[in-house]
Image 1: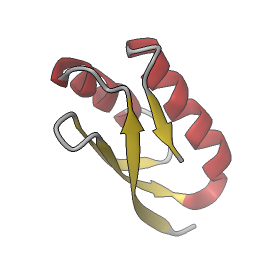
Image 2: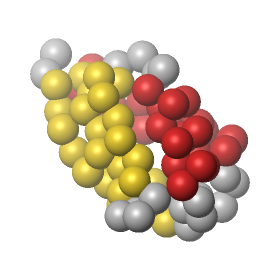
Image 3: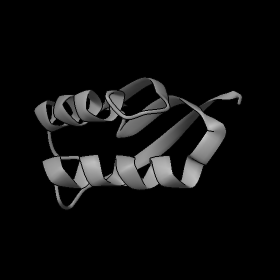
Image 4: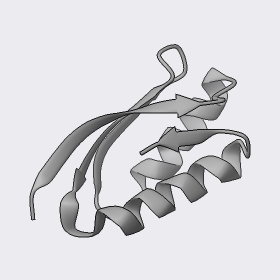
Length: 75
């Protein structure tokens, strides 16, 4: 299992408070080592273990949609 560091573009991220809520939710997911969501940059920096990338990305998208339904991550 390797740790992967990637940066992803975010679309329709409307406020800094929402970004903070998303970051807190994503940080709790299994496999996430570190996450930083920037409202100003419209980006998510993610460190995660690559054991089940597809499943993790689905879970991340769910966390984001709960906070802001119009927002999405460009995986």
